Amino acid sequence: MTATAVAGCTISVTVSALLLGPLVQSANAPDGVATGDPVRGHALYQSRCTACHSLDQSRIGPAHRGVFDRLAASVPDFDYSPALKRSGVRWTEANLDRWLANPEALVPGQRMGYQVADPVDRQDLIAFLASPAAR
Image (cartoon, rainbow, N blue to C red; front, side, top):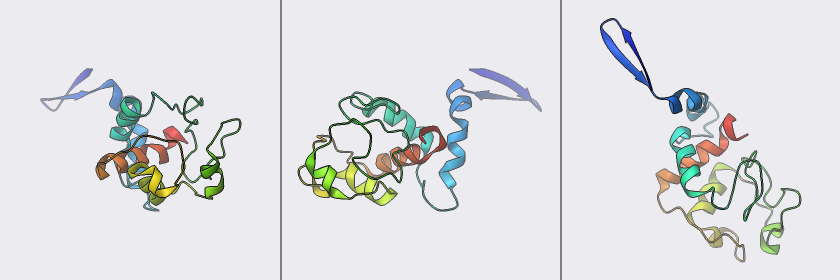
């Protein structure tokens, strides 16, 4: 943490805010895509998603870099369920929200066994995935 005195006031800036600062710019994207908080979404991604996913390497689940607006089941060399391969789903904000809320309702027969019940958490995760840091 750093502290700087400005006009008699002390301003503290955390290291994570400095590193993730570019994410905040995408939160108010003019096209309305990223409506959540991408900084909070990054923290949620780190705590909830990285057991199975990473941005750059497929694990139990496929890699997520560039997932926003990508066609489902399109990461090369990942073994997707037949249901997801046939789905034709594009990962838009609306479809990611539906997927995170209940993957089985969106694509019956898929293999992801995790849901994000809180709509604010979903929007923040989506904002992170749509941000330049995850593209």
